[in-house]
Structure formats: structure tokens, C-alpha cells
Length: 297
Image 1 (cartoon, helix red, strand yellow):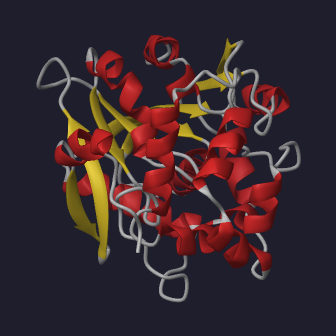
Image 2 (cartoon, one colour):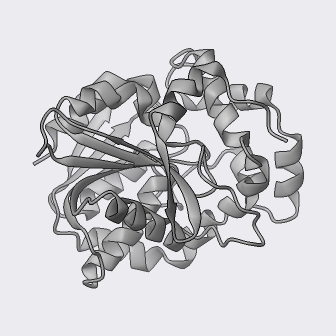
């Protein structure tokens, strides 16, 4: 049984709601912008955390946009079915994202993705290329994701969780103390994010049986290899306004990934956050939000 959520997450939970999409419960925030016709910014979060990563940047984003952010199935406050009952494929996560947006009446959006979310985004682009995307995409922003897995420097917990044999044992034994230590190693500065925020990240990871979901979720790394041509090809042929927004001090999604993305996506712009690591929405939320908004067409 997971421990109760920290009191600091009470407002976050209260301001969101559950939707039922493709038979799964999905937690979502749908926050209005300054006007009724404000453009929609839809956020796809990373692994192993949740859309709560966007919380510090929300005020700045909402000054211009309606913001929609959901927790992928298996993450945060969304349903976390056992691995033998759900595939946890990036294809399924793309289906869920589209289902969320359809349920909220979103027909056009700027898609902004971080980490794991960048892989979901590339699958959406592959469907768009084939005329199968029921959404008008206004622009894309990719932020600190290991889309090019050959260039990424995976952490040892990522490597362990990827193993079907070792992963479940590791996730059962992993502690909050280890989580804090590993998170600090991902930031541009160890003290860039306050301990209470990291504690909230951990609470959302393990909430409602989240430990058991981590190993099946980690299969997305194998999908990145298996479907590399499908997803990299969609980036290479992308005809959308594209922005690569990157924390340059990221030890996992290293700068070489950002440089390759900016080179392969036609017309893409590249923005560096020089002293920021893997979690720019938490480490430098105002700078990240300002850069994200400035690049919107």
C-alpha cells in the first residue's frame, strides 16, 4: 500500500480531474488561458514522474495559453494497471493523449514534450505523416529527451529497471533516500530543486502501486530501438514549426542529442538553458516557460 500523498499535493489533486479514456482512468489538468480563444499548449511529461513537473511553470504559460497536462497511464495520479494487464507501450500512451485531448474538445494545439514525452510526441508525428492524426498540430517543442538512445547516457537505475529480471527487485527495494540522491545528480546544480518538490515527485511515483509499474514502463527504451526509423523519419520529414529547448547540463539527455535533433528537423530552432540539467521545468521554470512561449508561432 502506498503512503498518503503529501499535503503539498492536495491543491494539485483538487485542481485536476479524472477522465476515463480507452477504459483507463487518466488524471488531467485543463487550465484556462487569459482569453477564451487562447491557444492550447498540451504538455507530455517524462519518466518516471508526472505532469506535476510542469507546476512551477504554469503561471507563466497561462499568461498566454490554455494549458492541458495529463499523467500518462502508469504515472502520477493516473491509473497504474499491473504489467500483465496493460502493455505500457508508447503507442498506447499516444492513444491516451489523443483521447484526453478529444474529450476536452482540443482540436488544435502546440505540443510540448519532456523526456519520455518526446517519444510519445514522435509517435504522434509518425501518425500525422501518414494522415492518421485527428489533431491539428500548431508547433512542437522537444525538451531534454533521449530520442536518440545511442547518444544517451542512461543512469544505472534506468538500466536496472529495464531488466525484466532485476527491475522488479530493484523497484521494490528502491528508497526515497536513493530517489533524492539520483534526482540531485540529474539537476544542473544539486540544490536547484527544493527537497519538498523532490519528495512530491517520489510520492507520485510510488502512489497507488507505482513501483510495480516502473519495470513494464521501462520497456519504452526497447521500443525506441525497435521503432527508431519510424520515429526518427517522422522528425526528419517534419514540416511543423519546431523548437528544441534544452538544459545543457543534462547528464542523460546530453547536448549532442539536442544538436542532432536541431540538425535533423527541418527549420528547427535550438535554445540552450546553460546551467540547467534534466528537469528544466523544475530547475528554471520561468526561463523555460519564457523560451517555450517565445518560440510559439
